[in-house]
Every structure is written in C-alpha cells, then in structure tokens.
Length: 253
Image (cartoon, rainbow, N blue to C red):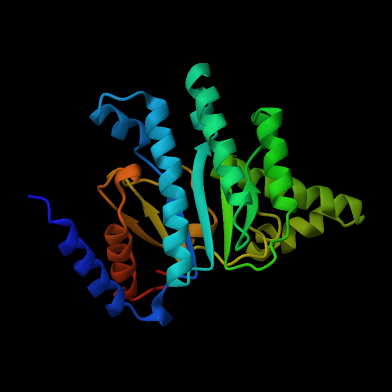
C-alpha cells in the first residue's frame, strides 16, 4: 500500500536530516534506466517515457545541488542504444537536445560531453560542443553527459590518444610500454582531471554496469534501485545516500 504524500514528505525530511554532510558522495554516476518500461506500464508511447526520464534528470540535478554533490555523470545514451529503430532514436535525440538546452539555462551547472560525437546527428554534436565550451558564471554542479558512450570505447580512445601524444613528443614507444601506469591512461579518459565516482546508482532493478565508467568505477560503491527512472523519487535518492554513508569503503581486495 502506498504511503500518503504527507508521510513521504515527513520521511524524506527525516532521512535528509540524518545524513552527515561529510558523507555525501562528491561524484555520483547515474544509469537512468527504465524509461521504456515506464511508458509500457501506462500504455504510452516510448517517447513519453523518454520525456518523463528527461524531466526526472532536471529534478534529480536539483536534489544534487541541494545536498552538496559536486559532480554527476549521467548515462543517457550508450553506443549499444544506437541499434534501436531510427524512429525511436530520432525522437530520443530530440529529447536529449531539449534537455541540453534546459541545462544551458542553468547558470549553476557546467557540462562536459562524454562519448563519440561522430555517432550523433550534427545538430546534437554541435549542441554538446557549445554547451561544453560554456563557462558558467558560478558553478555549483558539474554534469558529465554520456551520449553515444561506451566504456570499452572510452578506454580504447584513451590508449589511442596516449599513443598519439607519445609519438608527437617523439617518445620511445617501447619505453612507454615498459613504464606505462594506471595514471598514464587516466590522464586521457573522458573524465580526466575529475574525481572517480564515489557512488554509482542504477534504476529499474537491473544489476549490471552495461559498460558505464568501467575504468573509473573500480572502487565505486553501487546502489541498485527497483524504481524505474521516471518514477525515481527523492526518497529513493536519500535512501541511496543513507546506504552509501553506512558503508565501509575498501580501496582494494
């Protein structure tokens, strides 16, 4: 049985008051999963599910700003998703473009694009480039937008860029291979210069990474939520933060 709205409000405030600001994750990765299933529950078109998911993104980013999260990485469109029907992809690309426009209107948010822009329509790739180049007047939240993103591809791109950089510097490739370190590759990831995610959240009940931040999430904590992304509530988010705060993080075996 559903809890009445006023009780949910009371419950949200209770959990939020219990959170230690020092235990709020600095960087959260989010796999926004379940838009299509949410639409099917209401016999609605898939595009309505994607739009509801886009609206939830803006609501979620507001929660993050309120709670002091500094970096959010949103897994919005994977390279595998590019295999969907042309009609669905066209609608989804348009919704993503509108989402980017809404992010552009927020003076407190900076945006960084992650993925393969050559896989995207020109208009969407151009909007991502423009938004990434924008410097906000004040930054409360940094948002990585993973569109046309694949974790394996990111690692390959990083190694490729590392090698091109070595050749441009006239470095000895054999010596580079002998001395290569984790930090050398990290310097060329899409998220270079950013902290690795402390917490990765996936909605819709699925419990797999699906190629999301494969390198960066080596020591992340994971939280899997049954709610479909458009139905993800603030109380669900607060529960994830409470669960994270109660964990003893171990950076090794």
